[in-house]
Amino acid sequence: MMEKVRILAVDDNSISLAAIEQELKKDFEIIPINSGIRALQYLKRERPDLILLDIQMAQKDGIETLREIRKMDKCRDIPVIMLTSKQEKETILETSMLGICDYVLKPFKGDDLQQRIRRVLHL
Image (spheres, rainbow, N blue to C red):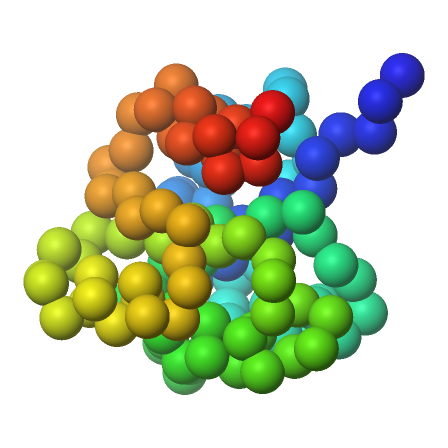
C-alpha cells in the first residue's frame, strides 16, 4: 500500500483546522498545527509533502511564516497552498512572489480543495 501524502495544515482557528482535517483525512495524512511558530518548529524536524497555510494568524502570520519556510534549505521547495479569507490583491501578489502553488479562499469546498491539492502534487 502506498504511503499517504503528508499535509501540514497551519491555521490558528481550531474550527478551520478541524474542517480541513475532516475534509482531507480520508485521502491524506493531516498534521494540524495551530500557529506559524509551531509550524516552523515542526519543519525543522519533518518534511511534509505539502503545506496548507492560513494568512491571518496571531504572533506570526502566514506570510511571515512562508518567508521563513522559504529560507529553510530542506523546505524551500515544499509546495504551499494559501488557505485564507483574505482577498486583497497585494496579499495575493506577495504570496505569489514567495512561490505559492495556489490560493484557496475560505470557506472552501472540500472537493475543490482536494482537486487543487492533487493538481499541485500531480496525483
